[in-house]
Length: 210
Image (cartoon, rainbow, N blue to C red; front, side, top):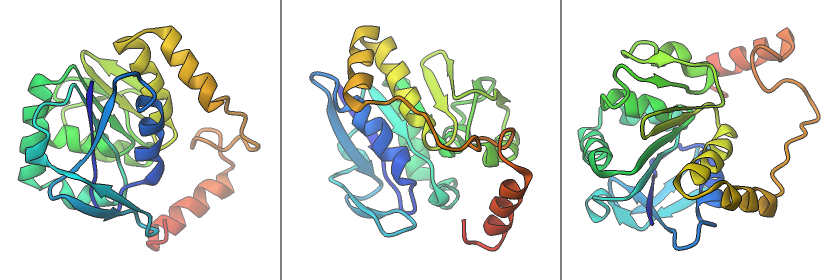
């Protein structure tokens, strides 16, 4: 099973690491960190991941994972990446995204007329495309699975594992990861977060700190 995870500068670390941790535990899985050009790519805090493969090196993965991050906007107009995504999607068994990665799928036209989700702070941006937004942790439409913000990529990858292989394997991986979320605060969505916290997030984003 060939799995390609796209890298670009200013990716969100957990968007990459979450699905990687799940999918890399699938027997026979080969993960290919892929980018427009092979090399090191940094998230916005300086964490580096090496893309050992360029887009042309990986033309036909069975699973495609598009993570999100602050850098997604900078590549929305990158025709090399968009053309690769479109070509890969034609052959893939599963095409997936995490967080704002859905915007790249939308820009490529892959989500036209389909249901999808993304990070709550990117919903209005996604709605500019001919996409039906669904407020869920992950959304399946055909062979496309999109997930909400950051941590939802783990849920998506476990769900995908159950679909592509079987539920038993997905549960074994979940158990091995001890993925049993019990957050200390009930502020994981704009519907639940205290108004003060939501306003702090928005002000930090507006000032470029978030």
